[in-house]
Length: 369
Image (cartoon, rainbow, N blue to C red; front, side, top):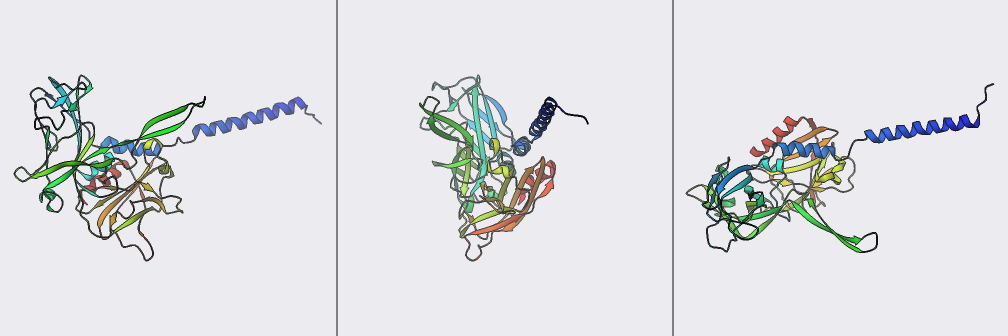
């Protein structure tokens, strides 16, 4: 009978532990990195979102520039100032990004809702940046003499009444895409520390109305006209949607393919999203509030509390990215009255696999809904 020494047993145990450790390490190495699905969806949408258009003018003389969509910017002389507060002269570089369609808003994650959830009808969202020698410039203050930078946005046939419900003036809004968080604590030697960081807004953008600032409908040119009040911030000429029906909270259930990483949104990139476009309104609602502790089949999002009008017809677009695959469902429906005893209305989605081209086609088709 062959004997095994204590030394041999010790060596075998050590080898087995090494193999087990190796297997464990290999398993950890191939574990999927968190946030990849959100990043994949974000990169697809971002790669097809509106891009900046670039122009050069002489700031000392001013000029007129027109974007691809026909929006006209009339820039007077001495419209821009440096960080030192003096007029900028010579050539300046102007970068403009604009969104006019619902598909642009989805691709850029810029829905049209107020900070408290009211629906906005959009005539255009704009981001303007002006630089000289790689230094950011500012607009001359509004209380200075001069006409300022004037913007004329071509109205579409659906807008020819001159704004929502025939209004001749539409409020201006300004938007932030990040929020600032301040943390207070103590360091390793118990000294107080304050750390300030910025994070992406989960709802895409926070729109707040600019006081005493409006876009006016120009019947002679068929444009919405306004004065540009700020640079390096999103601005929006939007009218509040007049929908008098009683409001409800909408619960959007993903019966399948809801990515649980949406609850944490690694890097601010959501792998599941839900959008709603009311019929015949250039309006986009993003449902960004994740339903908490849902049972199976009830994962998803809900609207602001009592914010969606009962009886409103519109189209939803539910999107997910899971394991490198896209899923989606587009669903046209009428917002129903809550069931007896409930204070919410439910909409369920059954997502199906789509490729990138199919998802982009669904997004584009939202424009005509």
